[in-house]
Image (cartoon, rainbow, N blue to C red; front, side, top):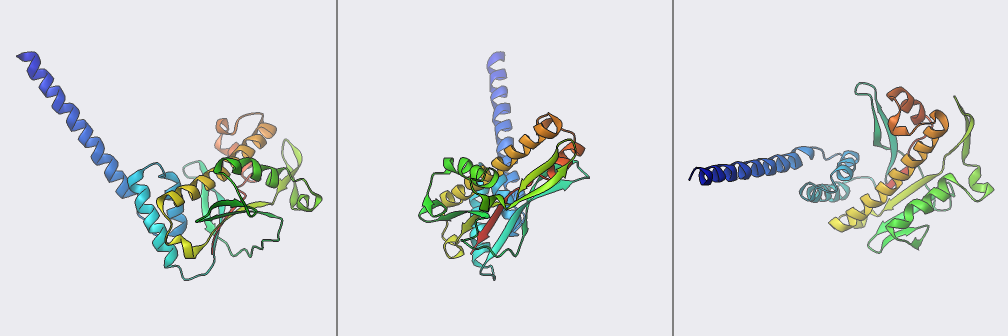
Length: 238
């Protein structure tokens, strides 16, 4: 009798814990989505892409935000965000007024629409992005694109060539209002591949400069790397 009562109490305890966890997760999803600012929504979508409930709401907010946007062309650049108070380094988005042209070879164009994903006008798979963009941005095969490199002097390394070539994700605004959750998953998958590519290159610079993996550096060391190894990514809604 005593063991049955104990088993019953343990069962209630487990159910209470599970219910508490559910409330916490649901509450977290609601609390995380507090902005209607487009750059902040994109950042939240990136962070919460695996949270089905939160991501669904973010997708709707993204669609609404784009449809209500007064500008015909929205252009943002991925920037390095250095927080000296918390000693953290991350990425963020900032509006820019860049006038990009398809003929400009300083940009690797990725087009996202109802037909899927295209790179430089050719249909590709999401898994192809990183290698294609890496070669175009960081390892150019022509003197023309090589001109987009900037020579800087870096402590512990000496002269270093930094690429000013960018990957540009283009999303048509007139279609954004009807973007499904799977479409936004593709967008964030594309953005994730580009973020990871830039972070891989940043790690290579860390190995050159400090002979250590970037993740093991101190905040001061990471800050020095961040001065030269940024995010070569632009997002356009037009």
